[in-house]
Image (cartoon, rainbow, N blue to C red):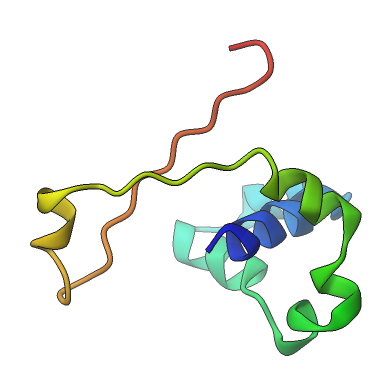
Amino acid sequence: MVYILSTMLRKAYDDPNFAKKNKNFSNLDEVWKYLFLSPEDFGLEALNNPNTRKLMNKITFEHGGKLYDDQYPKGIPTSLTITLSDG
C-alpha cells in the first residue's frame, strides 16, 4: 500500500500539467483513474524510482481499528492525513 500511494503521489507531482488537468476533473473518481497504476508502474525501474522511494520513507500506516474493520467487506475504509513540512 505504501508503494501504491507513493507512486500515485509521485505521478501527480512529476506531471507538470497535473494542476491544470486537476481543475478539469469533474470528480475524485476521475483523479483516481488518471493516477491509477498500470503494469509499467510495477516494473523494475518504477519500483526503484528514487522519488517514489523518498515518499515511501515519509509514510506511516496505522490500523483504523474496529470501526474500519466492521465496514469490510462492504468497502475498505481508509483515512489519509498529510502533514506538510510547515505543519
